[in-house]
Image 1 (cartoon, one colour):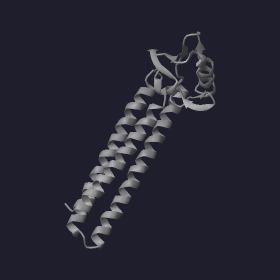
Image 2 (cartoon, rainbow, N blue to C red):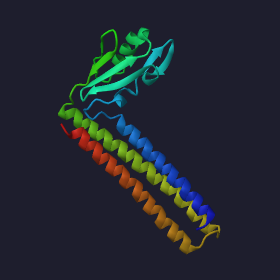
Image 3 (cartoon, rainbow, N blue to C red):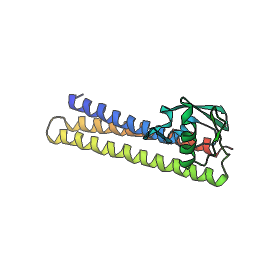
Image 4 (cartoon, helix red, strand yellow):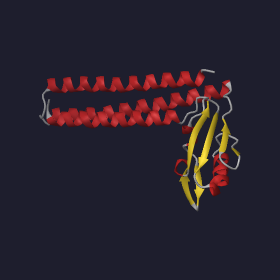
Length: 188
């Protein structure tokens, strides 16, 4: 295969993988009912005047399926961390016992589960659109190579078939991750 084509496929595959990774990260932020440290990833604490991610000032652990504990490294930060968790509007009511912060994760209502499943589907659609846009860009590059007589018509057809297979693979991965997340969300 032409060197230019190899570079196009390498670049395309890399971009598609980044899209998939970002989608997986976004799915992790969608609560599925079980306690998870990822639930607090968006929390930023006022740490001596600077907004700092919670994970840089404390350890977040799962005690059981409905409870998170936040072990703050600097005891003077217990109240600011508790305040930051409250203000993050995550629906949690943190309890500060003077040593660590305990968060009971309330069970999800049926309506909330449906909203979260819908959000997961929206994230999946955004990822699919991104994958298709990456395919569209690669297709333009391949067609330009043919137009500039750097590759033959047969090579173009072969490359476009390979590109479609790569696109289908990534969209299938997105669909499988979505199905698993929806199952997690909707399972009581």
